[in-house]
Length: 265
Image 1: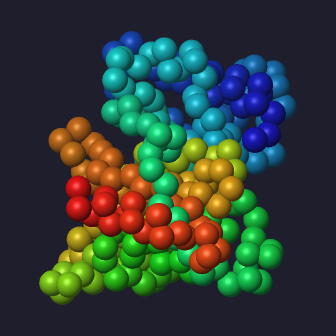
Image 2 (image 1 turned 45 degrees about the vertical axis):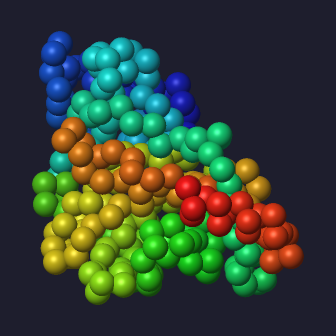
């Protein structure tokens, strides 16, 4: 993130200048960021988009904005067309990995040269998910990576980007599309970004069943995977699993017995 104090002052100013008590949506345009900087007499950031990216994906919105959300709701920034955005009230949903969840060991199939040069960012995470077929393991569907970092447009949203899209087929022959959002490092999984993934898939692949996924690095070679679906009040989590990538010899007979007992339950 750039200058957090400057970013906070600018986004607070934009919200305060547009918000009316009780509103569930607050529209603004990119130019409002510039006007806010001028009004505050602070230097305009060179990359205006980084202000929005920071509060959408890296850090929570300032407390002064969060305080205007009713219980059970939170503010999120959504795209609303070219250079247009909205603060919107959405159902509060935590996509933070549950530290008490059981971990499943998976023999690490990441090619050595990939592991040698991988970083702790979303591209490294997506590579590990791909080479270890974790989408297949997690969903129980045979899946194939169709495209990563797809930049396209979605109705009512303008330009959006999806980290990776998988397509799959199950034992009955049904076809699926799995958009997946990945976050490494300190970035936060974001509900609005997943909503955009769903909108993209519904627009581009209307004949496929859309099952949005999210994944996040935890500690070491452990990662969390989530599946979500549309509920009556927005997206809800339907599954969460944690996988640890280990050398094959580290998967013991005791581990396998435990996994079989999970199936029996």
